[in-house]
Image 1 (cartoon, rainbow, N blue to C red):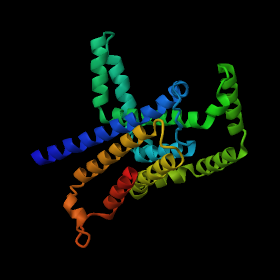
Image 2: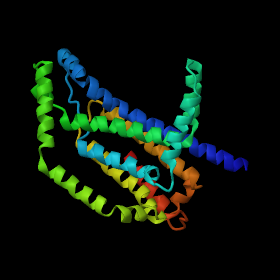
Image 3: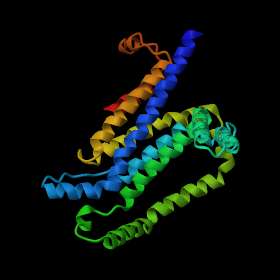
Length: 279
């Protein structure tokens, strides 16, 4: 019993640490979106301007898909995890008084709930990635915005947004996907409720995460917020791999013995994905 509790606590610790570092990795990119122009201006005055970039929008979208796949149980009607989370929020809100101490205690109680924590983690991550994707899609080039006022920069951003939204290819693709989903809604719902399909969707999170990280690294320069983001993303990948190894009771020594390896192929695939994320 003691060993089981120790393993459970260790798994939860690694999971919380990985989630925290993943959220912290978004802060350098968000700060670049908010304060990148000011930093470029200061570097230009000091005479050592560096190239500062953020990941492309398609790479950020792949990371969003990865997070959705990893939390696919929230969208399962039979699981009702999202419903339990919102029900807990409503109950806590009704019982909470108007004082600051009671509000802090209510927040601590809510965050301690596993369902509420998962919903809050997903919405926070998706919100941060969506902000970066919007800035990457509609952001104006610094060379074009240099020397212009805020109205010119706003006009350039709006024109860029209109050009992106007026392109027919994304809308046609979205229409085809929407027609397919709406036309086969009941079949897809029954299909997603099968355990094998649910496991496959959750396993696809690692593939989309690897593709997104490759896009972030390969289509950006090494300056600006990217080194800090890369370091935090690597730490988060290590935390995910450590959680998996502790949860599945994988001994590191067994991974070195290639001939007599008794580790499940699914676990090896997930560890390989996390290792590639670090690389």
